[in-house]
Image 1 (cartoon, rainbow, N blue to C red):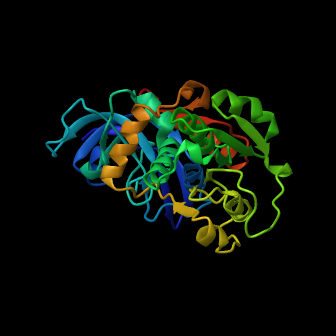
Image 2 (image 1 turned 90 degrees about the vertical axis):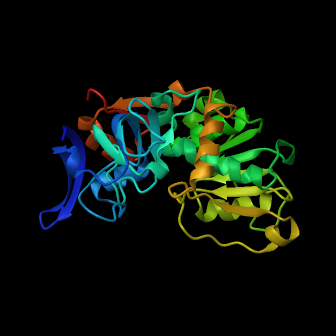
Length: 331
């Protein structure tokens, strides 16, 4: 057994709490692959779980962190050997299994992804769940015949982690990207990532008609609510709207007209439980032709395990910007 540090989350008679604790590898969730974690990242779900402000964990106690990357220490699965670089995002981490905010983690071999050539461990966690989600959305759209010729892709919530990475990923894949954000002071930054146009969410007026003049070839929507309802009538024939967030609400009102007249498709993107074969496709794209060209600019902050509570509070207060990396090894 090896002793190590972890951000462990409890919910018991003493209340909901998260703190740095010492534990040993024998206490970790079961799995075939033991990993010495080098890097993780901070997603909105991590902040909710780490503060108790969202019902993310389905059992307690657990180590937080839905993303991790590191090196295999030991494996009972012959597909992995000591020293292999691996990553894992979602896959029940910090929901029903111990997650990546720990110096060690034990993974189910089904969900441990060998680090693809073209990415290092740090880069894989700048991407993390956020980049994986954006690339998974593009994969779904392309599988449903989305092409650059249909017109520009609208990215809503463009100043968030998924939005920033989506701008970079979609533009690298040959699409014109129009970024929609309520933070006009970030427009120059978004353009530097590849956005051809930036649109102020506060000045974006929707007509309310069942269909309007086509403005976008498709969209990646992180917002939901009224934003999603307003976008659908603006999508070109046979374009796709991939939805992966609900910052603007979980409900929206629409009509069937965009779907039955223009053949618009609404695609759900649920990254956490993505099948293994799709995971491998996404990560190969992210290590290759879709690899963002501005990862170091998008990674605006680096924290250690001890600094996570402050990061969570800042994120939930809407004061974070870009991606926050978590340096686990040596922290």
